[in-house]
Length: 303
Image 1 (cartoon, rainbow, N blue to C red):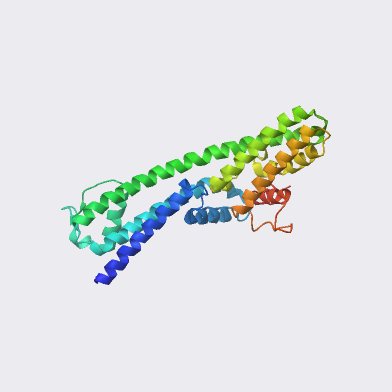
Image 2: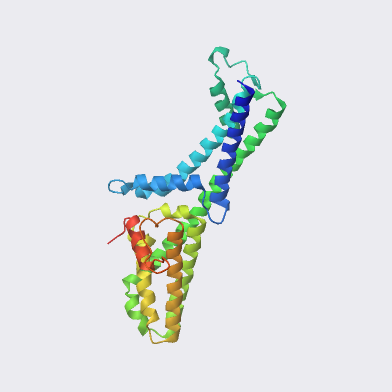
């Protein structure tokens, strides 16, 4: 292999590893949670599971997480394989159990990369060149970081889903009690005590959606646990409160309306519903009720 080819493969491998690590950082640690690989895989999984009757949508979220982790692992292993490839077999020491007539430069590079990434340490292939002896432990640390990041990611997503489902259950209860028809008759303090916490919960779900956009791709099993099925009631509740006679109730209605607008804006800004809604105002703004309607349609909760 020529020197130029060796340099190209090494650089290409290093760039691949750096791109995967960057995607992991943007997805898990950056406040926006917008890694390109993760976003593409999650949206692709959501689209595929939505084909036909959409019943597979219930596994879209968990399947998407698994596929993203597989993509990260595969990309990392591929990148390191390209780094090692120009230096196989000269840079490695082969154990006596490896038959020389069965060796392959590409397979050996991929095998050494996978074993090192998984920190298995079989010892049948050992780096001999000085720089490879330094790089191989670095890859092992990358594999350990990948496992840690994957576990951390899952632990971050499910609490956000719990908060979203709790809000959905509360909204379902308010809708069942016809709260929008009764809120104007409540005393101002009582209405404020009812609606102000709801505004806070909407704000928390908005933040969760911005920091963990992957949570969007989890479809809940029942309507009463699905925010897509229940959040459409918020604009009606806010509108009823804003036209109440008590000043406190009107204040609570304005707070609730702002929180609903914030959540709707997060859904659109993240690009999750942009293809479903179009701006209706002079500045291209979209009414919260229209965004929530599109949200319900996308999650199979319309009607």
